[in-house]
Length: 383
Image (cartoon, one colour):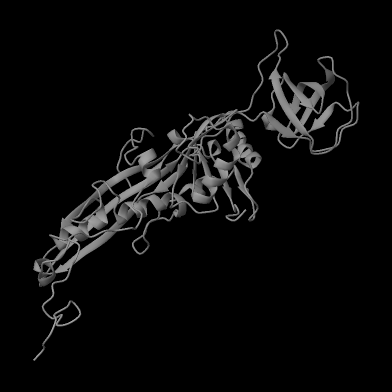
């Protein structure tokens, strides 16, 4: 028989456990890109005949305004060979280095020109020198001539199905648990988002929405067949012109603004930089010396969420799902998700001692006019 003082260290059999009646979760559940561009962009991109498993958007461009020499020129030659004679039109005033020439005739890739036009001096020019079409100046009363035209293109993407299952045994559903009043609903909300009986705030993204966020950064375009699941191509699939690979070099302010300028030079209006934590810190360091702030004696540090450049203001979107060494420079109104079937839940037929259901949705991703955007990859995450 036990005798003497009773303490919490002796006879612990009957002691009640102290357990928090709540389930907490540290896993990140934010979806910044989806929150910024939205899910239901069918009307923004003016899609018709929706929904579908393949969706296309039609793009066109203006005629090129530059080419290059296909030969070296001396100061007297009037037949100028270029790479693409179809870009030119009779009456074009072209510039090679500092010399202007006027195009009087075109035969395939050879331009007949008047050298030293517009008060400039004829000079020699090296092969592959840029030839700029500055403007067109026609003779009075001249007959009409063919000009350059462009062909429309139809970039496309495929729909992607995202799915998960909820399967709870009959016993697991009725057992009392701390922090969970309904096990099935708790697991469902982990898939679709929301509180789900735990601590998560309503509106927190579920696992399927997090998958959809990552499609933008990692998605590969795959055609659907009876045995192959379709894949939705992400940003890297479409943005192929304005790309810079730094090969683990440090990101610089010049490199960042060069990429912004390149997208702008094609006619884009980039207004957002999407990046992960390290790149966000680097960008903040570039503009720390020109930060606009109000003085407070009880706050240290600075946060830069928008940068002002000669090409416009760009918001910085911090996205933990973005590859750590990559920055995406985007024009927001040309990027977005489209909804084929919104995320939803349905219970499945019961054939055993369990409750079964599935959460499922089908979505697509659009990147219009890829030259309006840019990607900087291979950024060092240590310097």
